[in-house]
Length: 279
Image (cartoon, rainbow, N blue to C red):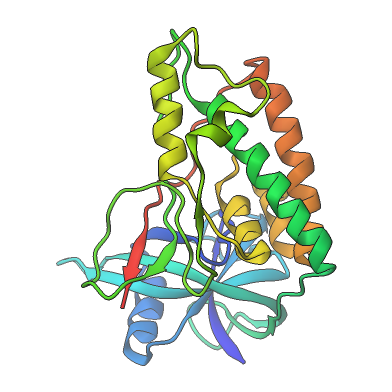
């Protein structure tokens, strides 16, 4: 199938939402056509070259279908849109001349779990360790940091709206399981007793955290949230199986936990993301 491409220095993972401001004329045209035909476009990360205004860029061979959920056309023709990653694709060929923007022939990539038992076990381990990771991202005394917010798509019978919340269930996943304050307190290295205010923040984060039961959905959710560089996030996107993705996530979370426990760096979240409700 053919789709228009939007090269960015950002990796979009399936189930994660991304707000975009469209100002360049060729991409305004692209968005207008996608809205008119209710068609997705593809987001691919730029391997080399400048941002979207450049005439020549090297792009990754695997990208994500971006479906437009919200679109606001501004008086001067620019667009503010909200897209949701709906699946992966492989770029087979690119035509730079057919339209003012890149057009690619792509093939959708089916998600392979690998060994289900192993993937399920890895998912449970990754989620436990990710809660510890969220704990360590909480500012300690004398530190300041923004709260991590994640936009994922969830289904509801209510009218569409956007509201602030923590990580939530992507559409089509199994019934999610909320993390509990007890799970937070059982994680080695969890702080709290000597700092009641910080402990309260951690309990609130645990209450807001909703854990998908599907290992594949969880693997993409964590891939979109964990604060890693673009190259590593693309590596997670390109993993051939859920099992492989969760193995890489486990290694990355382990590294981040080691760094954060020593306060070697303190992350600021890349995107601000919130739940996107759809009927």
